[in-house]
Image 1: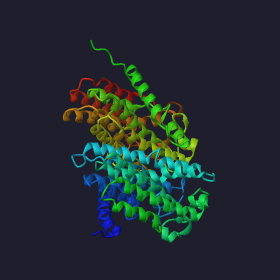
Image 2 (image 1 turned 60 degrees about the horizontal axis):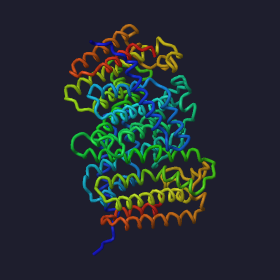
Image 3 (image 1 turned 90 degrees about the vertical axis):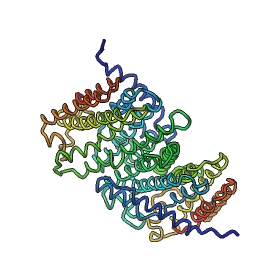
Image 4 (image 1 turned 120 degrees about the horizontal axis):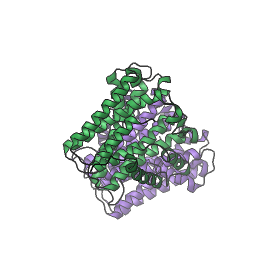
Length: 298
Length: 298
């Protein structure tokens, strides 16, 4: 009876909805230059991993409140997009290429890039709090809480600050893991939390999905570090070898390539074990997304 | 029977609560460098006009939900503080002095300033969405909605983008007003909205308070433009004459000093008329804050 799960087919319909929603929502009503920069930063690019995690977790949690889940999927992508805009700026990573295109500050200037990032963060919370009855207020509040925590000083922004302070510094594996749990992991795990929050789960199932998100979030970064070494810029769509060139600590510099790859596989196994422990039925998409994260080539 | 309203006495107790809350909440749990930059940006400085507007509107709207109002007061100040941090950066206004102290990027470096601003914005929404029963979920959602709109591309960030595009450009009075309604006015009016949203008002009273906020928000900017011309840096606590030096359009450059001052008085009268039209009793603090905004010397 069991068919192999087709992630590509599952993703396509969800991606279409997310792309349409982002295109419909982002940058409209903004002053022209700002709106253009916001749309450039968000549209037509990216794997949309975070929105897919929101929607897969939403499915696992019973798929109620589809409008809330769609808004959550877009909101988390806006936070991701804003972080890339700011991270690419000259005072941070000074990167000129992103998703195969000039970065936002190269295209629109630094001041507009700064504002576009700021406006995208605000818009994420605006998307989560529509007027009227489309999304119940308690879900609006929960989604804002989860997103703010994932994005802020004890989440993504905090991880970026640790990253900043770690250039040329010898981190222990624990310190590196802590940095990545915040820098990349918090928003990936937050995506799972937000999708799950659109449904109503028993605590044990919520905790299992949260464990899945933590394992996947860390695996994502380990694989990123591996790809930074083994892939080329054309495949990545961004400048390869940047981390090593910048003397940033990575899993590869700390563990070596083989052990970093083995660690990614171990985290993948943890993610699958957490899904099994959740007791939930519709976790195929979450499982396939974890596989994709670890086996991707870019 | 009627005593003259003592704004200073009224403000003191509220300011103490706001300062204590900000000090208790901001930057804790963040990585050390980031937390320090966040606290530096927020604590020990500023007139706290926006928090006082929140609390005065909250009082006018019946003063229910005091914890929600305190959180709203702090959240709106965090948005204001983050906007100053980013606005002072070299790619924007390149200002080195703020509230008599070195600006955040001078003190902590540009990258940390960028992250601190980003983290402060996220933390504003985190403050509005506490766990547990302290603030009802529907008020949490409404406060997030109002703050996101006031801060985003159709509010403060949008106004900054218009400002950016307006250097050396001859704006009409309508265009200048539109810019300032977004850049400064949206967050000031948003402060009034957020305070009012902690209570439950009839639509006509809500609309009157909103009109008050709009008039006060514009008056604030007109007076700012006047002070940029007539005050010195020591009094302002920031670099005076910056706007004229940067060839930015201002109310003084457009209307001349006398007409700009008259316009500020006209907006003050509009603010008072709106309070009278609200039919609300406890509007003395809002009235006194409007007087203070127009009559201030810095």
